[in-house]
Structure formats: structure tokens, C-alpha cells
Length: 157
Image (spheres, rainbow, N blue to C red):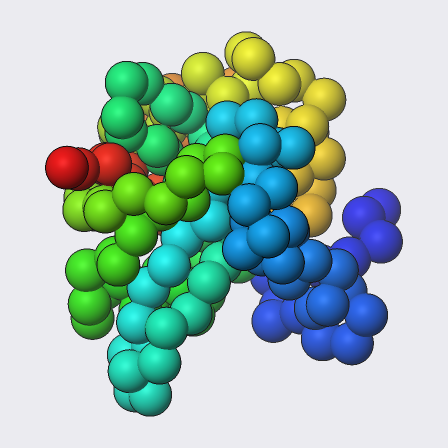
């Protein structure tokens, strides 16, 4: 059983722990995460304020980073992207202009399969934290990613 449940909005100490990577990115120490984590800057859908969300990369190819909404389609950052395009993406210690594309279930399932192949232990732990699972088939992964949608963020300029 996972010590935290990512299916609910984090609170308390866990909320602050999840925000701590943002401080490191802003201090230009994002290189400590390599390319496994990035920080997405986006505008709040209601407030219009700049928001910063560190996220784990599910798949990276060239200048495109696939990100998973582990708390589902109601995650604030995901809903903000649905309303407004991303402002920028921090990769390592560099901030880049960015654009996004929402992945369909089949494409997201393929990205998740790549993540599982590259990070099998982390994939099992993340699925436990996210409260999802699949039967190992492409169809099973498609059913899973319908609950945890994915976005491709591409660095531009």
C-alpha cells in the first residue's frame, strides 16, 4: 500500500514536499533532476496567475516531453492547460517556450509502455500511488491512461 494517495489533491507536508522541486528549478538547480523531471509553467484558469508544476517525464524524444497527470483529468495543471497554452517548460537549468498537445489513449498507452520498460520499479510504484493498474496488454494500458491522461509538451524557439 502506498503511503500517499495521488488520486486526491495533496495537503499538508506532502503538498510542500511535492512543491520543493519547483524551488530547485527556480534556483537554476534543475540539472539535479537530469531530464527525468521538468517544471511546467502555466497560467491558472481562473486566477490568471503564473503557476509552476514539477512533473516526471514519461517519455522524451528530441524536444518533446510526455507528461502524465497522475491525479487524473482534474489535476489543476492539466485543467489549466486545457484552458490556456503552457507558458514555458524548464528542462534542467534552462527555461524554454513551449506548446502542448493532448495525447489520445492509444498514443498515451504506448508512451506508458515505454516508461514501464525503462523504469519498471518506478512504474509499479507510480501506478500504486495513482491508484491504477492494467493487465499488461495495450488495451489494458489504454483503459488505464483514460484515468491518467497524458500531454506532450514541445520546446519551441
